[in-house]
Image (cartoon, rainbow, N blue to C red; front, top):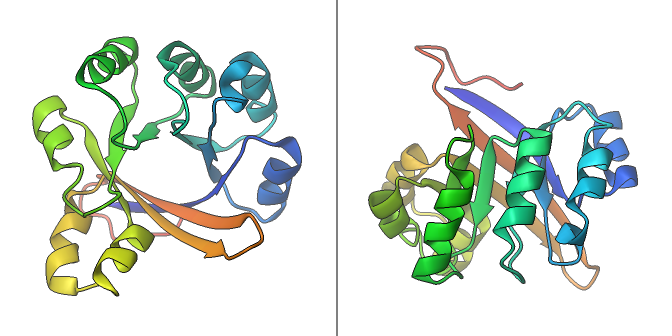
Amino acid sequence: MTLEIAAKCSPNEKILSDIEKARISAAELYLSKDILRDPQSVSETCKKFNFKYAVHAPNDDFNPDALCFLVKEIGSGIVVFHDIFWEDEWKEIIEKFKGLRTKLCVENIAGVHDASKFVRRYGFGRCLDLEHVQFQLSGIFEEEVLDIIKQSSHIHLSGYVCGTGFVAYTYLSFEEAGDADVGLN
């Protein structure tokens, strides 16, 4: 199993440059309706950096064509969604991403088991946001959360600096690596 740490940010060249200077080799891009208006431009910005990318789908829009275009262009291995879409929209998302080597994941919002129905129904991965878990449980209870962590394809560790608009994010991406120890890339 491999542990990879990345910064979560908007696809802004200055921010990505700072992440590169910090010697972080991966980024999770937080997207919005405004950002995805020009996925070609976002792609060009991202291609200036040799990051391993994950993408967090917009919470304010449904545009699977633009999202899929960007994911293909930057080679994102993970796409994270919140459970905000209708049944027919999930089917369209699945169809658009068919054939891509990208893991679609659903993030927990109100409870650690939010993603379970998507894991069972569609074969999606689980994105576990540990900060959401902490808010829900007033802390993390190992007995409950360790099994969920083991089932997760993608994990967020997030920190909000209240009142500043700044969000400090890292994510953990787990991949099978035989019997290898968990290591930091």
